Length: 259
Image (tube, rainbow, N blue to C red):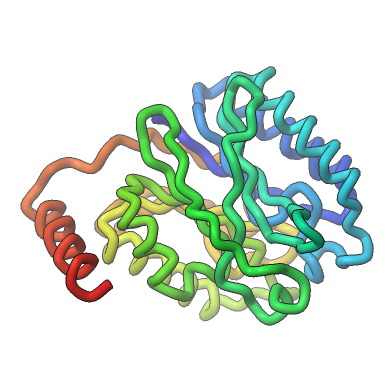
């Protein structure tokens, strides 16, 4: 399955963000991409980096999600878009996943909440795994990558590929933080034998990469920091090798015996 990520600079203007999402979807469709993934809160901006909680408009977000669904259908794409979701009086930091039919396949809600998130969002409990083009595809959001548990949950659900959607940026470059977050992505890929793709906002200096890693943690593709471009890769189920069998066997043992 050819999948891609498209980073851009989110703002507090949903209409501007939608314009970028449309442009990315059209470009992806022309290149034969089947699944296109955008960053954390791409649709509305991430509070407090790109917007504020007071600026979030639930009705406007619902309208924008409806437009995203129509875009998925028009371009015959699976689209995954970061947004804020409202349910039962709570706010969730979410990824919405749409099918080429325009149907919403569901949401993943961020489970590991950063300091700002704790003041703004409820903790998610959804599994975040979807069957897309014959692959089990998982989604995680930003601070999730700091912890092995959200990714072990993907391993239990036999996810074959994971996308990590960031809104991790600072006013000035922080190369050490960038390398730390990249190392987390590599570790999550290796310990679960699962390819990982990451995408990050461009609204300030990126402190997490836009990149694709294979199941051994090798970097297959990576943009330059703060580079807006479509990053696409043809994902295939991992080859059956001694290494992959060893990872799978030990993961099964640890999941059964250590929880």
